[in-house]
Length: 472
Image 1 (cartoon, helix red, strand yellow):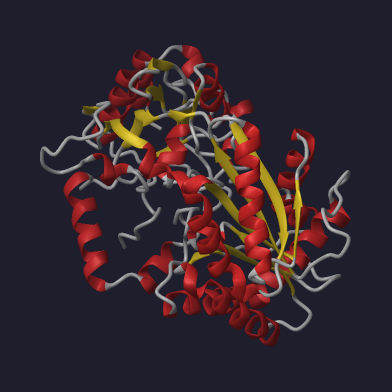
Image 2: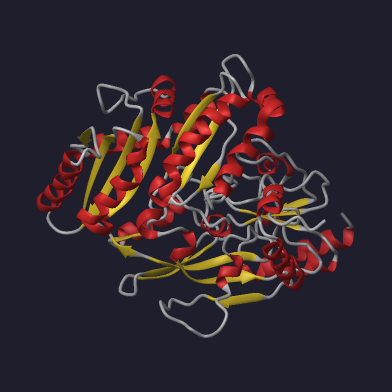
């Protein structure tokens, strides 16, 4: 790092906006510890103006910039490379709420705001920000938008992209694009915000966002369902939606194996049913008005589904603590896998009508590739997203298993998802982990257009190079 660059950076930032080496180490390793990088320097600016000034300086000195939020991503998108030549830019100091309007039901927050803090801000105003996921206590809004995060409520409210009204973005030229509108309708040319949502910082850095808020449901009904077969998944969801409409807010599939891993490895967990069923669904209904009529509506919907042989058994959560215990079983599956040594993770999506077929074809295919491998199958099947994770045989390390079988297993899973008109990355993004998969599965026309956009906006290739789109 040249003295000229460092001195110019110090003129932009205060001393505490430059991250000390002692605090840098955790920022150089991704959440799953698959990537470890080095940084030329790390900074944590407090203002969008300072972010813009840093980008202008980096462009002048041809220094690449890696933006980082809560560093909770699964694909290494916020980890610098090993060259030690990239600037790591943390957004955590940009964490303010700039404006909230309960009447318009929108809020403008900076990119570094932690998701859970935004949820609480909405709740205080008797509103709901519906984006929800296991990492919400540490992930940040900027990262959620940069990866177009999904989570537990996509079925009713959509992905992160669907919650955005406007963005503030620092472009690769160091200019501030202020599109922080709170309009629900604005038909004035290109909708520029969608260039940056899901782009993982490769086209610009999101520094603030105007987001939709929703009326907070006054009543929730949570139930654990035992299914007679996996083929019932899509018909059951449609049946429930016909009965209660969009009050079905979550519809989560849990295989017997995934549930068993939680029960064995996560303390204070127990199965909702006496028998550990092969296929279970955790369903949540949310609505408004008096609790008793809504609960009756949901119960009747499940009774009718059971009479049509779509459900073998149903257990309702009779209290908030029981509802939380049901959700704990679903949300701690990744933790259980980690406690067992880890897994080869897959985040695929297919049309809901093909979900059961995908799972049933993949199970024997993966066992044929890796005898005694253990499967963990679960996910947000209400929106077509399944996590098909593969754990090594007992007494085999995840490292040696990945080295021996990882590429072959992932190729088999991603190939079948593509055959079923699906995606190899439903909600976790591409990062550096899956950049090769994008080349493999995207059409030449799509790749060419993406490269054209990258070249037009970032010709110097300083914005998170090597992530999402391979340029070499």
